[in-house]
Length: 134
Image 1: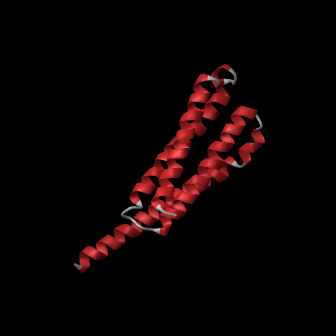
Image 2: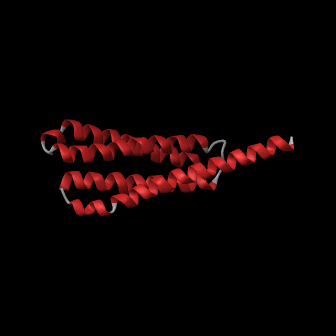
């Protein structure tokens, strides 16, 4: 998976988070109670944060080649879909049992972040070895 895919996924998910946020702010506030609105807004907010992260990963991939970044992109993308998607479903349908899969999305996001930490640590280690060897 090249950097263009991370950027493309990030921009699509970012765009849909803006759409969902606008939908929530302009339509759902007259339909749902404040608890459901809060759940919906949490989904949109987490989707935007992690969409921006995917774009950043794509930009970093130009100079920082790592399979861990590819894995991070996959875990973060899946995490967004499961975490935010389940929150949207809960808010819109009221089916709270869907909340059982929300933590799976959260764990996927955490794994994505952990892969970024590991990847950055390896790059720092590699760079320090290069500096020592020069």
